Figure 1 (cartoon, rainbow, N blue to C red):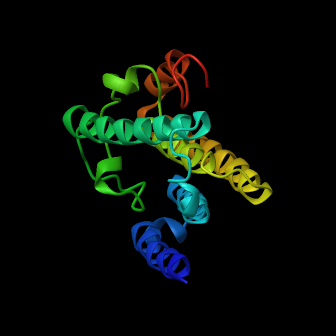
Figure 2: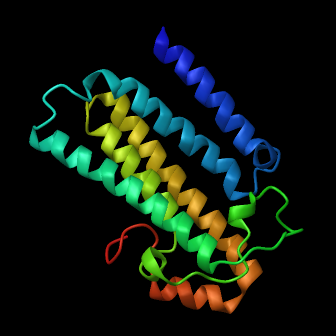
Length: 182
C-alpha cells in the first residue's frame, strides 16, 4: 500500500513538473514524463530487494550505477548554470528555465556526451533494474531505454533549430549518453 501511495505522490510531482510539456506531445518534456514514470516504477517495484545481499556482484554494479547517476546529474546542473547562460525561449514555452541555455556547453561531461542528465536517468534506471530482475522489469527497462532515446532525439531536433549547425557539429564530436560508447 505504501508503494501505491508513493507512486501517486511522485506521479503528482512529475505531473506538476511536466504540466506544460504534456500539453505539447512534440516536445522532449512530453516523453521525459514517461521516462520519469518508468523509472519510478522500477524503483518502487524493486525497493524491497535493494538491501538483500547488498554486496553481491550484481548489487555492487547497481550501487555503482546509482552513484554515477547522482554524480552525472549534479555535474550537469552545475555546468549548465555556469556555462550555458539563460534566456527565455518563446519557441519553447514548455521548457524550464535551466533548459533554456543560450550557449552550447562543452565543458565537463558535456565535452563527451550531449545528454548527461539523461545519462543520469539511464544509470538510475539500470541501477534500480539490477536490484531484482523479473520479466516485468525487463520490459520496463527496455521501455525506459527506448523513451530516453526518443527524448534525446526530440531535444536534439529542438537544439538544432535553436543553435543551428554549431549543434550539428557538437553532435558529431560527442556521444548521446555514454562516453566513447553510445
